[in-house]
Length: 289
Image (cartoon, rainbow, N blue to C red; front, top):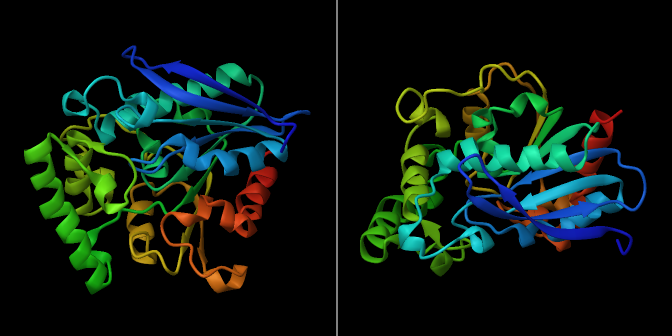
């Protein structure tokens, strides 16, 4: 890992918004280039150890903060106009363009975590991707969750978000250990999409008039864990239904099979879960042949 070169850069989006990003470059020849799409409210440094691991195994990696999150928040969060939709239509496409610019004549792969893998069909340049590997990416539909978690999710989505937005002008997700503070439109869209079916599909022909979910036919792997109450099997299938033409494989992980006590929604990318990291690495190597 000591041979991996790490640079912190800025990415300019189509609307001239600047995103903070980090690039992990292997010391030797590059097998492929990987974009890590972050989960809702999760800053890019959360993925640094995983990105370095991929780079140490020959893959160039770019991580980034979505607008309104961590180092991509400019000014007061109350004034931030970011939404989940613009994360998919503006931020992730710009990050992919930068990856292509930095590593031309490579193959390009998305590793998405939760929302970072759900928005791929909003990218106008999604056809540049050779494959998608998603962890904990699902519709997050509340009604498909186990009852006890469903109640907690309803309280967060339908009580905490609107009350926090009304009082503070944004959602204080950090109070509940859910990453960074969220711009109010991000949280509001998250609430709306998880209350319906198909997540982003809720906005088709409403706020989203153009998308590419139906067009994409690339190989994809959708991985979840038995102890993830959000991205359970039913919600993964609900999300997959939005992209019926993808070449999709699914894999459900049981923590004890890998010597782990938990994986859940977040810990796949934790340094303590390195026993899992061969799964995406082997996927990438197979897709880069």
